[in-house]
Amino acid sequence: MSRDGQDQKLIGERLRKARENARITQADAARDAGMARTTLVAIEQGVRRVRLEELQTLARMYKTSANALLRDEAVHVDLVPRFRKTLDAADTGIEEAVALLADLARAEVELENILGIKRSFNYPPERPILAGDVRLQAEQDALELRQRLGLGLAPIRDMITLLEMDLGVRVYVRRFNPKISGLFAYDEVLGACILLNANHPLARRNQTAGHETGHLVATRREPEVLLDHPTVNSREERYADAFGRSFLTPSRAVMQKFHEVTAGAAQLSRRHVIILAHFFGVAREAMVRRLEELKLAKDGTWDWFARNGGITDEHERQALGDLKVADQYKTEANRPTTLRLATLAAEAYRRGILSEGQHARMLRMDRVELRALVDELGNEEGAGDGQLQLK
Amino acid sequence: MANFSSSDCSPHVIDTSVAISLDASGIADAVLGCLCRPALIVDIARDELDGGRGLGVTARASINRWERGGLLSIVKLSETANDTFESLVSGSSVATIDDGEAATIAHAIDVGGIAVVDEAKARKTSLRRFPDLSLSSATNLLLMPSLAAVIGPAAVADAVFKALTISRMRVPRELHFKVVSLIGEERAALCHSLPAVIRKR
Image 1 (cartoon, rainbow over the protein chains, first blue to last red):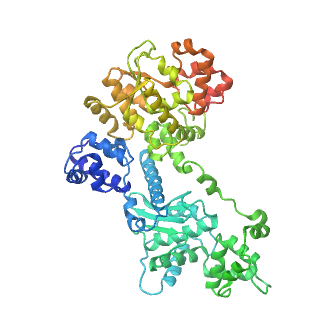
Image 2: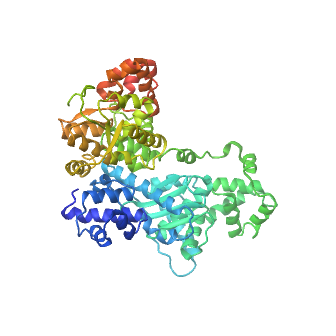
């Protein structure tokens, strides 16, 4: 890519996106780069050619590189500004979480592109929220998606695999501020992306994933942040909540399983709740609230449990024993990047497509961390010699 | 490829990864002290370590110390070097390298110096685009006879082993066997940055 002609416009656009992702105003960027604001505006609009020294200064300020701005295949998206409304709210670490999602998705798409990997998308048709009861619409849409995926009434124990493999959504499970449960964003270049918090238990993450799937179905053009304790109760949020509940715990399946689990019992016990929550892969509180909603338990049942010692992990251990599901994603989240990104990066490294510096910057990793990752995957040149060859 | 020789008094322009590996070796001061003039690092390469983590942070602090001790100078790219730099960072992913690597090569060409680069793609790019440029590596510097004469071969072997295990130093292919014979097969087996075929001999 050269700084002249047609590319001038593209570079201007990339500079604007990089500035916005860094959350720096035009005025501040221009002042710190020692240029008039009008000059920066002209550069970003592609009207004026950016000088190399200016490009280097701006790249440093935006925490990127000249190469990332001038590399043909570099992926530039403006996810951060799209969350502006949410970012203006109280500081809850949302900005860092959005930046994390953007970095992961951008790196994955660029690596896929340069390695010639075509990802298949199979998004469900959009179902805009209509006038009337959002809960009923959500239930209908959730059942429709279940049918489409051939799930019937079966429980979904691993929402992440389902979203990735069956729908082609990019899902990342990483550790970030525990006040945030998850993020959803859709972009023409990246596709649908979901970030889930590895600091939350598996069952909670499943619920967050169910909620974000609701946004994919009904409001995919609107980026969304789900907080641990949501303060917004819009129709969109109520729809996504109801969608998640219906998708993970379909009413008919819950009724059927409830009948089976509580057969012969006179009252709902902690053990019943634990078995049902385990079966559907949701949190114990979510399970009880769903039972209340479906009138299978009295209103206030969860509050009663809460007032009387709750339903604890120890209760769960006693009830489930070895049946408790291991959380592989939590372990993976302790690694510097996702397994998929690591594999793609190691392949690009092995083939010499990207240099160490390009990789380190793209993955936001320390060089030594990157070397460790590549070495672990055994991807030095010639590592495959004598091994089984893929067609 | 031009041959690097320790007696060559051309300036050595070191890349980010070389600074990290030399720092991890624990004998960077002695290495840089063996060069006949202060090594150079371009500000762009040094700045890559800003805001970093782990060994990047300690290498950044060491660069400041080397500079204060007169072992290293921080330099900026000239206008001519900027043209080379731009040609190395613009284009397809396959044809380009990152800023620090490009700046190191561009400045070495500009001052008729030796580019000290460990990164394989940057070395290949340099060889293809600038066959007359002298290339060296952190390993080359650690293997300088003048260094062994000062600190002794055993200390050199320990330093190479530290650079390999702490910073996972990348060793150019042509030096693999030399490194293994220096540190011994037992220690080489512990160095995951060496190719498996070398480690498992």
